[in-house]
Image (cartoon, rainbow, N blue to C red; front, top):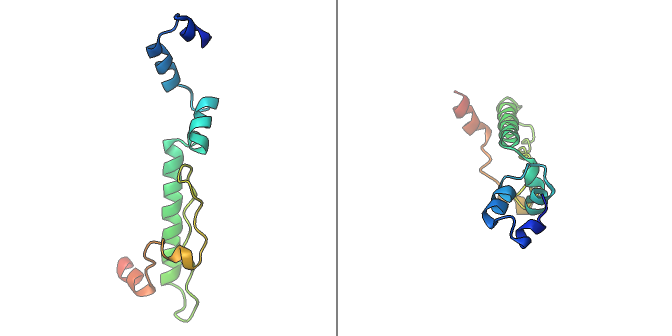
Length: 113
């Protein structure tokens, strides 16, 4: 396929648009336009969500079953996903404002009962 055929009038704009729209996922054009997000499929996003849920469930279990006098466990960070434009926030005062509610042992115990 020669893209100059579009300029020469031998390739219609509609055909060119269809060819560009259905480029393979690993094409250089999609990687240039979408960056790392072009490499992630729906399956990859679902796997990342499953990992996040499992780490959160493990954190809840460990929080409920820890000694009352022990230091609170750090809330797990989600798997970084492409296209969000930012990395997972580092724990600290600025991240505390963006974090989701971190339930305590009493709330988690009610959840598991």
